[in-house]
Length: 206
Ligand SMILES: [Fe+2]
Ligand SMILES: [Fe+2]
Image (spheres, rainbow, N blue to C red):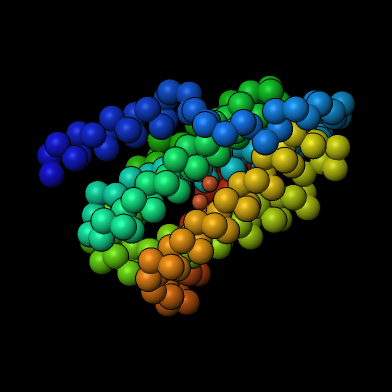
């Protein structure tokens, strides 16, 4: 267990402080950067920072789960999804820099909280662990949909990233379901939405 914890701690430090890598080409790779007004740029930056923070949390959740998941097949599937989450991290990170900003200063805080939640969900057993994951992916997907409505129409680069992420998250939700995710009680879903509301409000600004 101590070995595992050290490995996860190391992963955490890298997630927070080292640049993430993407095996797939960035979805906005061949798209031109549009001329945006200062206000549009600021808004796109805020939204992409929220998405980046969400991906930091996803890393922590998956890590927490990997520590506690019991079923080998489920663990392998989760690992595959975790690789895609790291790609999301790389895409949003680069876009934030292109828009002239920096990732949220609160990332270490949200990372730690998400890791704790991931471990706690994992300790409840695989079906709750996966249930939590499925619900997270649904909520993130809904969030990304709302960002597609809010992002400047001309910002094709940010939009391409968010669209691909949304498609990936839908696949992750499906995967969690296939491996036996239990439906979460409504109050838990509500609490998750409230937490994400706080996260999105703070990381949009700073
Ligand atoms: Fe993601
Ligand atoms: Fe995901």
